[in-house]
Image 1: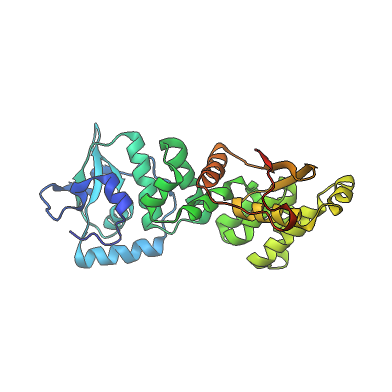
Image 2: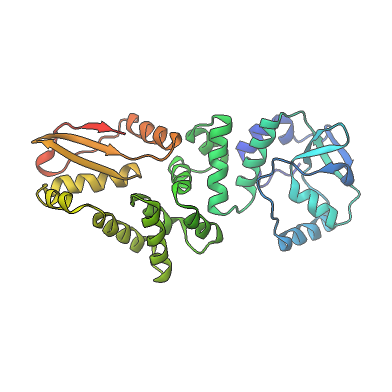
Length: 303
């Protein structure tokens, strides 16, 4: 059986029989007896790509069976909706299928993982899929990373996009703004500022690096006048540490000095998952050394 394109994460979710070379468990099921997966996260299928797959199926048949589960009447797709749709276009009456007994939760997880591994989801669809795997099924970022074949920092950065205002998320979904352009906006304190900054980025076609610089400048402008005067008296090392912490932790960080050599670090988070990500990063034992005169001086964390 042809396994190309099947990631290990989906393979492990579907079970070992799915990847076996033997076809003893495969049955030919009428295409008309199968209904789509109701938990399918993707609603739109590229007609050109379906047409290409349909032509391939006309020539070579369906090389890899779909996976279904039995219903009262007929079957429901678990994995392989593109193959099923393309088979309909090709005029096939039956399609090879593996029949499995899955719960609704397993159906959802498999549908999400299959889409993440097989389809070019837009960045926001991808972010929502990762969040669902974590929120609905209790996957950690590390587990999601293993299942979909992406690095853990990639997963964390992807999910962080969900903290942006809907208008900014729509730009990322449509491809008018890249994740690299949008992610720096997370350091800005309000959705209004983030939306305005996004408009500035689009109006001037700023690069991701330019977007980082814009967000840094706008973030400084939001400081109140009394705070600005106080900030000018802070040593350069503290400001540098604040920027470094924001970059390392991937969220807005504020350092407040209470007295010489002591103070509070405030770390912003926007969801329980975001908080767990930050805590896991800190618990990994990575040391962030304060520059200049603040080296080795203790501070307390506030989140």
